[in-house]
Image 1 (cartoon, rainbow, N blue to C red):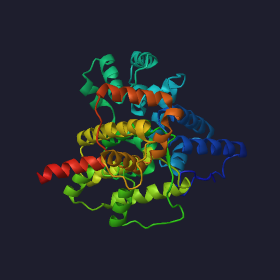
Image 2: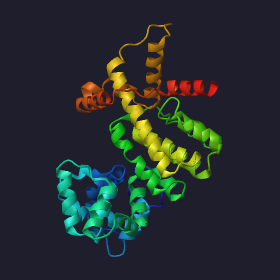
Image 3: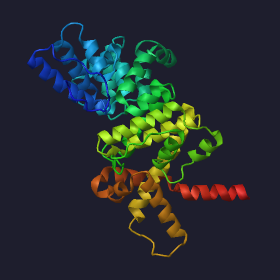
Length: 382
């Protein structure tokens, strides 16, 4: 039996009827697919190639059984990965494509000139988003963009998202608690935090049994800012955690245990934002707006800390500068990015200069969340 690396407790695929060479090769491909499926566009091709290798290696009729036992994937999901590998397997600019853009352009119904245009635009530095891919495809098929979007099989995209997303988010999607439109908006969090930003600190020895209250308390503890504005909508909605969110919190915790308590910060933040979708009844439009505002606050916090982080106030000193320092400190600490911000200039100078340039062009700072709530309180009092 192949050891599971993703913590999913399935009955497993029976490898005993296979020859030893096939068992060995399929076991290696299975392990690598489990690891790659935690990531996004860069690994879509490798996943598709490995799936193709396994399909060729297994006896006829066994591929579907293996897919379900190892990953819980359908033939359709596997086919999408293999289509991406076939269409884009030789390109070196895969990182410029959003995962759902690759799926759209790799479809057998997509004209080859549409793929070539997308590749050409990517080589020139353009990020090929899902919307850009649909626009390219619609134009080459002689359709309006809305028609192309409507004609794309939604279940295929849903399957692809479930395969690519962290398991807690895939669980919420499967349960119908969030939509694919919500989760597409959360994928860019990986770039905002960078995949290498790890948030340690989960007590992997504990084995909590979550209920609606403890799940809400835990989700609050992983909030990406000290005092998120989303709190206001959550409080106004007054909803307890539904079973789907309680279960997703448990899945998140078990994933943390599987990874020795070291989780990418983008996955932590993505679960929190998904929980706000559920608890505050956020539409994709409201989520998009909230994420844009958060992104500005986060980038400003990184910039401010690069410039002033070493100017820690003296003990007992509490003036405007001290309040500002501690407020940014608190936002970054809650977001798991304080150490990252402190070393950003030496570890990622390109991003540091880009952020500082953006900040200079705007010439304004977003308030840290403590001060944002203070100003809201003052307005309410007046």
